[in-house]
Length: 331
Image (cartoon, rainbow, N blue to C red; front, side):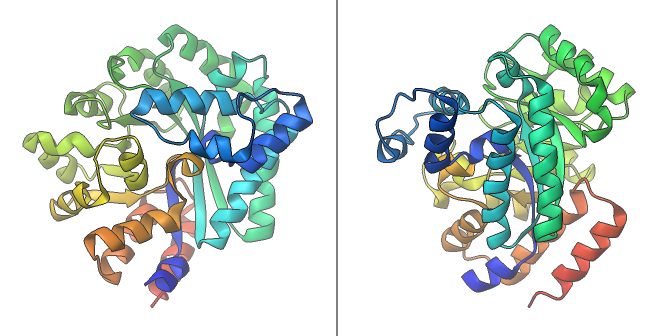
C-alpha cells in the first residue's frame, strides 16, 4: 500500500510554506543571516515539537520564522519542500504564506514574492510540479491591518490564486474579516478560510455566508451540526483536512479517533493535506499512510480523495485533465 500511495498523484491544497521549515534548514538560515535561535541543536528543536494546542505550536512556529530574511531564504524554504513533496508523489502544491508575520519583522513583501516565485518556476521546470499561492491573513491581528496588506499587495494581485484566513482561531471569528474578503471578491481573487478546527461549527457558517469562501480549511467540527453537514454536502464545499496536524494539536487524541471516516461516509468532499509538515510528523505520504493504518481504507477511497483534490485545485483546466488522466492510470 505504501508504494501505491507514493505513486498516487497527490495534490496538496492546505500547506503553510513557513510550516515546512525543517530544523536542519532552520539552523542553516540562522547561520547565514546571523539569527540567534533559542535552541542549542537540531535535536533540541525536534524535542520542542510537542504541543498542547494551537497556541503553543504557533509560538514555536513564529520563532522559527525569524530566520527568513531575504528572497533567497524564501526560495530555499520552498524548494526544500518541493523537493521532498516531489519524492513523495505530490504533483501540485497550494501554499499559504503569512505576509503580516514577515512585514512585522521588517521583511518586505517583495522579498517574499520574489523568493517564492523563483521557487515555483524551478519546481515546474525541474519536477513538472504545478503550484498555487494563497496569501493568508492572521485572524488574531486587526482586520484593518489585513486590509492594508491586501491593498499593498496590488502589484501581486494577479499572482495570487486565493486569499485565506489562518492562525489562532478561537475568539477570532471569520465575521471579523468580512470587509477584507469582500474587497478580495471585488478584485476577483478566490477565497478560502480556516474554520472548524478549534473553533465552533458556527465559524464554518460565517466563512461560507460572510466571506463567501469556496473551500473550508480543516472543518472537522462540522459534524457537531447535522444541518451544516447537509449544507456542505449539498453545496459540495471542499474540506481540506490535515489528519496528522489534528493529532499533534490535540484536536483528536489519536488517529483512530479522527472523524475523517465519518466525514467521508457523510458524502462530504474531503481532501488530505499536511498543513505544517515539519512540525506535525510528516508530509503528504505520511498523512495518507497514517489514514490507511488507522482506517484500513482501500485504494478506491484514496483514489477518490486524490480526485477530489485535483478537481478542487486552483489550476488550469488543461492541467486538471492531465492530472485526472494520471490518476486514472494509477493502479
